[in-house]
Length: 303
Image 1 (cartoon, rainbow, N blue to C red):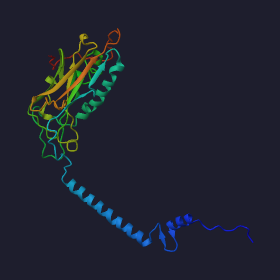
Image 2 (image 1 turned 90 degrees about the vertical axis):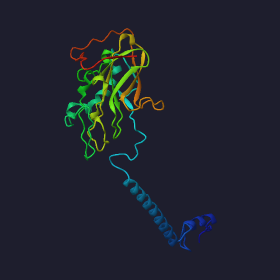
Image 3 (image 1 turned 30 degrees about the vertical axis):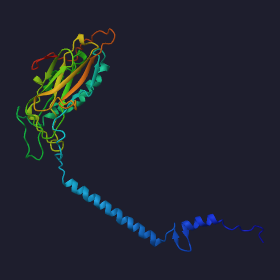
Image 4 (image 1 turned 60 degrees about the vertical axis):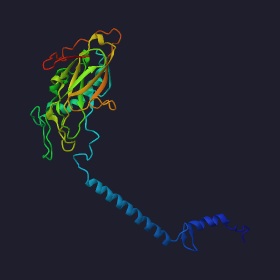
């Protein structure tokens, strides 16, 4: 005979057990199996209906879109201007390669698509005429080889003029589908204060009309934007002076003076030729070619 008496279960413990499963009623967490089945069926139908409505509306919306052209383009009728190297503050020292090497690397990387081997597969277009291809399913692109940029191409001068204190800046227009600028668009740059001589490549800083219109990334896969190289002919008088330079697209109907958007048809950047201590000028290496050929480029002294 056991001396231990069995203790009755506490009411709280019994109620918790019956909450999860009640053997008398067959309920699980307060509901019978048929009740749970009806609830699952309701939510299955409800969420299935929502998923069907979402899929239907997405399908209808996609039928209104074009894979090649955005439906609404009225907000971007005019292109902005951008520069390479991708920096609004260009600070360098010609005697310290580490100070301008990041800019050189950026330009080298950016101009890879403009190499002759990349551009040989594109078309030799007629200068001065729009390259219309509205009826073609896949559009062809006009050639733009980097040697057109001459001293700023990175071919004759691997440092793009930075080691000489005459840096090159590449200017490009943002791509806008269907843009056909009237007139002869060209880039004009000038310092905010003072005077500065500037060289442009191609000659006179022109964007040829044969690179327009643009048909979109999918419909115009081989397209590369035309570029204008701006070579700043800095002098010793520009040592340690920050020069603000504004470039605009001129000679066309494109806007370049909207005060609400400083990048609409124009761009402002700053250049500083920094002199560190009394370092002597770095002599040109005999193994590194330097181009002093200014043919095809007319320097402008801008104020």
